[in-house]
Amino acid sequence: MKEIMEYLKVRYCNENGQGIVEYALILAFVVAIATYVGGDGTLTTKISTVFQNVTNAFGK
Image 1 (cartoon, rainbow, N blue to C red):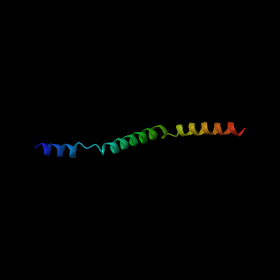
Image 2 (spheres, rainbow, N blue to C red):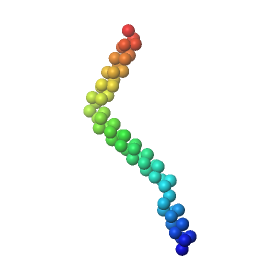
Image 3 (tube, rainbow, N blue to C red):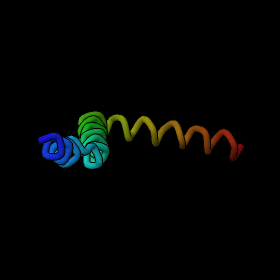
Image 4 (cartoon, rainbow, N blue to C red):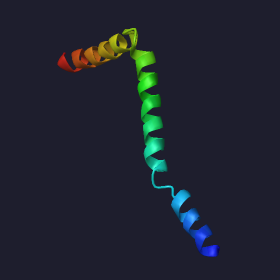
């Protein structure tokens, strides 16, 4: 009976796939936030403006 319990514990309590699921959830969260924030284009416009200002400052 002890051997069966050990086998079941090793078989079903293995956490190898847990890391992949966690990374997938984090990736989905980041994609959702990026879509929400950058969806209307205002964030990308602001970032582009900042980079353009920095470029202009070094070009002068």
